[in-house]
Image 1 (spheres, one colour):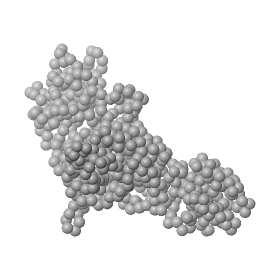
Image 2 (cartoon, rainbow, N blue to C red):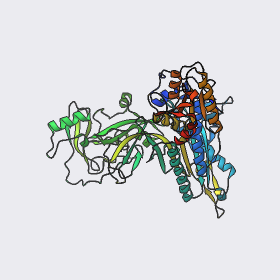
Image 3 (cartoon, rainbow, N blue to C red):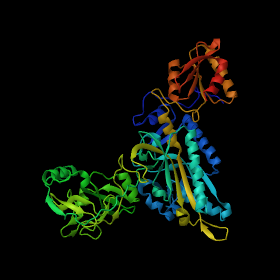
Image 4 (tube, helix red, strand yellow):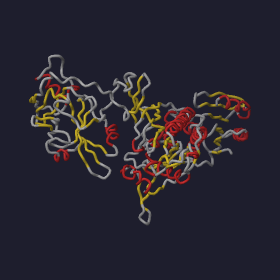
Length: 589
């Protein structure tokens, strides 16, 4: 059926929305694909739904090819399954919770592991039923503190989430690889560049975890990669741990006056001026920075933790959030320092002549964790826990120890890849897919077991595989546009071709109608701009904005059987005979 612009529910806009930060947000609103309802929440208009469904069709094709079957769960789910797995609490403020009229707790599902697991438990009981892969395409809800960038980071978003069920680890490996391969095919068909990186599983849990990241300057994720093939997001990057050094013969720790040195830079300047080294100048890498963080557990309780790391590095809060999850992580406040007895702000250190100052068994009893680079035998300049005093030659393993290690320092270009494949470079990316080997975490919590070949109950092992459907739509829009508007790839465009009747000559409309009908009868999905009282300039502007990649303009030479064929992707515009349109359409595929 021909779609006519004269009756299509569409209103294009000439001005950008005031809250648009990125091109996809700006153009999808202006071109009439989506409309804002609330921060991070959008209504879908006919054009937007057509593109969204074409993306979903690609996903469904490849899920079927991978042996997965489609199901559909409600978005509104009861509290109990999430209570059993602990995620009702672990999600903290990140989910939407509500009560029904009887006071029962529900949530708007941020993800569906629990109910998928319970469904299989309800229906399957034997190893003969496995392997199984099922999936859905469903809206998800997360209470983002700062929804931004239109569909790229919203409170309501659509995901394809698939789950595999096996009773052996080898079976899980095979299911995982099948889904991973399907993702590569999906993103290739959608024309999206991607990098597969090692990732942290976060609240999902599990062991093996990989993200599909689309490299883009507006990406919210930083990832690292080496020329030798290593790739990981910064949360999953593990710093290379140097070998311990000999302690014997190192100079004793000594406290020096250090007036006016509350920062690493001022400390280094003073050290080189008053206490110069014989071999080389002091640098920030010689100092031990002790960062005080406040952790807030999901039950609201708080604790301070101090992290000792080389002074030329800062804490990466995203890495810290992963390391201390599910607790929330913030920098300590003046109020926290006031309550923490024994900490001298700006001059904090783990040691004093009277004994340890930091650590669970120290005078302050504040947990003290060390960066992996702070190995035994390394010597440092750090605070002496006295105002305007620092201790020099403080040796790890001799003068101080930590309660453990935590790898949360910023990652830098040139840092070594942990697999030895060379130095890493940093890049920005947007997550478009994520695959996990969940293992038995959810099956154990919810009692999903089957009888194996020997009649013995075994716990099922699971995989979880997610693709951000609406995010992918926005990522494609980010890549596929020019200054005038969208230019959709053929695979996901809302229509195969747009026919524009230009001018006021009745012949143009007659020929355009005939052409649109013939194309439609040949199975071509046609958008026909048949608006009689709209100027050619407005029609052309709307055509550029909407982004159908191929446009036929039926104008002043219509009576001669000549039309203009416009390829938005290349910018080429040629006059051709009417009978050549279908051939050009096929050649342009």
